[in-house]
Length: 162
Image 1: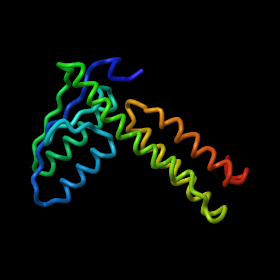
Image 2 (image 1 turned 180 degrees about the horizontal axis):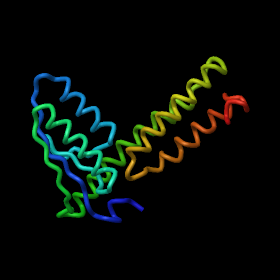
Image 3 (image 1 turned 60 degrees about the vertical axis):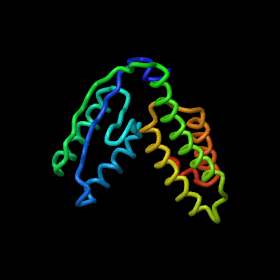
Image 4 (image 1 turned 90 degrees about the vertical axis):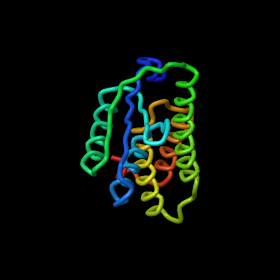
């Protein structure tokens, strides 16, 4: 079941950060990307409400303020379930594309066992990062997990699996 259907609540971050210097703005943007946020508008992002997501956005808000910007955290309920579902669908579609990239990479044929081992490790890490920001799992999630597992079984020796 989708987490949004469990609570119907969202954590919103409204923020503005100075354009210059650009490094803090880029760092905030990258953190938000790693969190898998839904972008609702310019300087307005959302995550499904939860202790972890609230804490993550609190940290980002603090970073924005520390760099001369403004930030506010809000807890909100959807006014329209169809609009909320569109946000959920957008987040799910974004994660599905990331999982498909993992599936494609797992289907490659490494040149040798060492390259296969490196690929398995990299894809396992990528799968963990995607899963961490996957609030509404698409079917591709399980397919990607199986693809990486199959790759591991083909390219990692028994001693390295432990």
